[in-house]
Amino acid sequence: KAGVTQTPRYLIKTRGQQVTLSCSPISGHRSVSWYQQTPGQGLQFLFEYFSETQRNKGNFPGRFSGRQFSNSRSEMNVSTLELGDSALYLCASSRNGANTGELFFGEGSRLTVL
Amino acid sequence: AQKVTQAQTEISVVEKEDVTLDCVYETRDTTYYLFWYKQPPSGELVFLIRRNSFDEQNEISGRYSWNFQKSTSSFNFTITASQVVDSAVYFCALSEEMDSNYQLIWGAGTKLIIKP
Image (cartoon, rainbow over all chains, first blue to last red; front, top):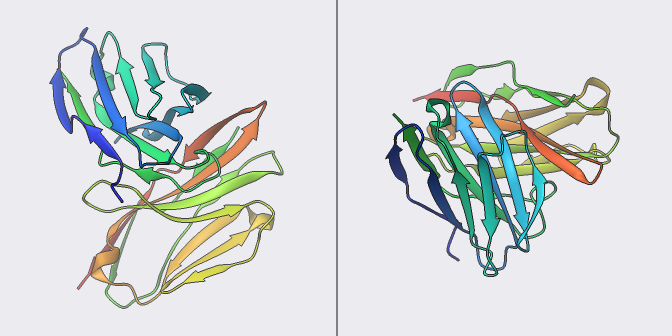
């Protein structure tokens, strides 16, 4: 079956701009969670959406937001970009929830902020 | 506070050697989950195993085995007869639920290099 698809794979933005990343989960998976990966901070949990509702949230500022659509596809938005937002953003889907189940990851969206 | 420590930043071994990746965690809860994931150079994280806090049984899957010890808060991962394809970054992660919320806490990762 098709895996988790993230778009775009690479993007470059400048400070102050905003960006939207997209994630299509595996068919039948209701949970989509997002993670930020940087060399300095490692992997950090951003938030999880389950059946269109945000179920859990990590310790990130309000500039980071997301949503999930009825087909389980999810988008993540970062507003007023800062240099420190440069990172690999990973999306993962799971059938029942990110905290207990196996996560299936996409290849990530690599964001560079100049 | 929850915390996951993978003290080994990088390990380099020659093919066919056995190697153990350490993971030590901190949590105050009695109910939690532990995970191992592999991130090959392609970047896509791959699930390896999940353990809940009530299941201390060790697990073996082919060349992979996991040793979960609550007494020492450790969840170590051993690869037997390592192969070049095992080269990757390996992450240990902890999840616990508090007040109907949770955070999946990741270790810093151990980069494993298997030399031919």
